[in-house]
Length: 346
Image (cartoon, rainbow, N blue to C red; front, side):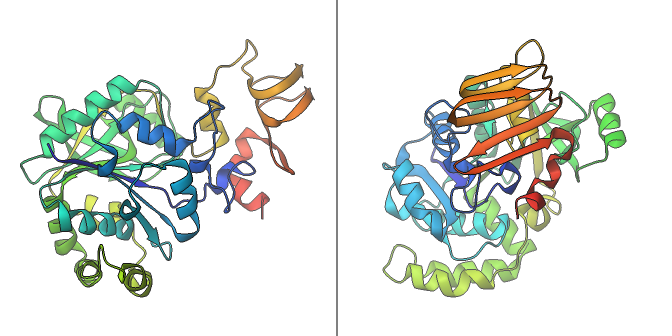
């Protein structure tokens, strides 16, 4: 199987301020305090599926040096620099057109760079099953996560009939719901969190993009003439910013009729917020999650305290709060107000 992995690494993770900033986004940070950044952990979990030569990273121009530093074995041609942010459809199209140029039979996994997976073996089993399903036929698999709570921060997948083994047909995609709707989804049992992980063969995705976004496909055709040449950077710099800003969900997933899902349970989080990180960390008997050198807690409950760069830190009398520091930046914020961090940090 000619498997390739495309890692989308262009986001700035603004809800994870102050640890994630436009100069050093969360995918390039050791958020878990384990000695590896999120993008390094992403490569590691896929490493059993294909060689490093089959990894591709799409990122902003300003982050190319960070990618080279953190993934030194990644070939230079496999770092795709976006001159402008244009959402996920142009990002994915750029990678797939470039892969197709030299690997016309490729079977591809597209993944975010900043998610966390706990059960690596189960993750690899699910991805391998999806690759087997998409290898020869015109089918797309999006990995669905079995929900553990009525989460309002994720999009959902409504599942349909069984297609083959554990693979289910996708009936529809649902936007991030309000709490009441999320509770209904959980009770129904036929809904999964949308992890933003896609599996397809190269012919399937390029055909779908030609069908549903012909203008984008035309730009990619023009760009592809320069791939693997000294003119690639200039050509991409001229043409890529002319792409429409559109997500792969709107461009393809919500329009095509060949969409399937595999319900998965491998301890996944998109690590989009401090609250999502807290759910995956070890917590003490009062529900506090802590990263730091010498953190002393008194009369606190259900807090996340993330102060890896400081010496002694004392926190008293907080409940349901974020205390996070990075460099000379500090935030103390209620967890139920964390959606406002993007605005607070401006």
